Length: 190
Image 1 (cartoon, rainbow, N blue to C red):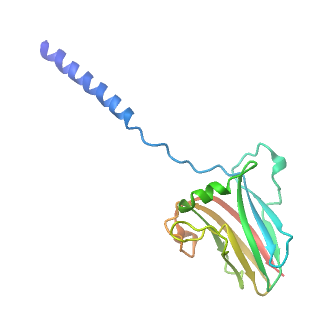
Image 2: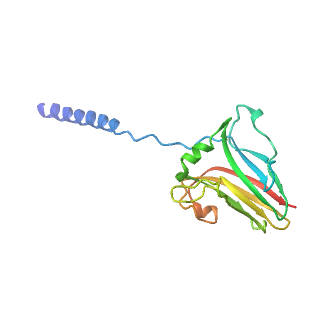
Image 3: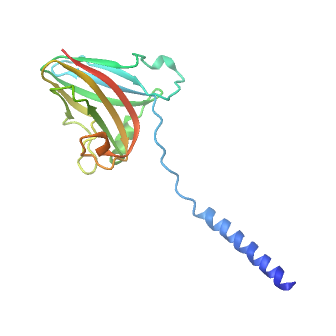
């Protein structure tokens, strides 16, 4: 009988110690991905001071204040002139708050990637001189320069990537990581 009591007591004591030991070693909270409601592109033709702003509603987001979102249809069309250069900046919002600064603060964990379809011949997007760079000198592509040559049209898909595995790839698969946001728009060069 004494043997049964001591085994039960030892098991109970071990279970008690195990439970309290685990609670002291709780992992640090995970930095959850930001909740986005919309994205804006501000497009300014070089030599002009009149930007055009395009607003993209982020899918799967239930807007509390619909007046703050510019619903421009399923596909947004961006008209550009041939043989021109444009300065483009991208901003990210959570309802009414501009949270682009949070992405810049976490610059090593983010990158924006533009995937240009093959039919957009003579259209290019490069990082601007005033773009933010991560600690390794890789651009985030938040400020870009778009260059057009001849008339063309096609689709561009933009991705805000969280924890990319590479920031030097030429396709979305090369970049890796998780997609925080995906936007799609048609570019028409006239």
